[in-house]
Each structure stands twice: as C-alpha cells, then as structure tokens.
Length: 131
Image (spheres, one colour):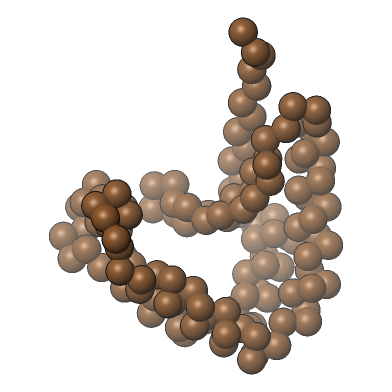
C-alpha cells in the first residue's frame, strides 16, 4: 500500500507520504519517496491555470460535501475544539485559502519545502513481525 495525504501536527499542516511493505526495507522506501518528490517537479512545471482551477473546484466541492453520519461529521469540529478555536472555522478558512492559491504559490512552496528542504521532516517507521 502506498499513498499520500495531508494532516496537521499541532498548529502546522503537513504533506505525508506513506507505504506499507513486507518486502522493502525502510531506507529503500525513503529513497523512493525522495526520488518521486524530485521527479514530480517536472510534472508540476506543466500545471496550467485551467487544470489548477479544475482541481481547486473539485477539492472545494469535496470539502463542502455534507457529512452523511456523525463519524464523518465530527472531524470537521474536533480539531478546532482541541485547539480552543471556538469559531469552528478552520474548514471554511481552508476553503477560502484554496480558492485564493495561485500556480505561482504552489510552485514557490514546492521549491522551498520539498526541493530546497526548507521544512521540518518527521519520519515514522513501524516494524513488526507476525506472531
């Protein structure tokens, strides 16, 4: 299993890549992730405004989708609750920020945070054995 997502650590949002493997050592996975992050730069350079606008519309629509049960609704509020944000407006502020982001913002941040490494890195490796 391989994937990526975003999440928050404390007050800081982050981008995460992850893998679950029974046959690949953690160091090889780490190297593969780094290789992907650097090779993605060429694809990011081809991102045009029309595609970016379509992606933003789709992401905002997903964030605005009504929850269908309590399990999908409570995460929208629990982080604000734990952070003492009585306005419970993190999701709306995130939607607003997504609407305002430009291609130049994305390219600049990718260069700074991924390519130049001007970010913090958290690495978690969990290993185990069948019992």
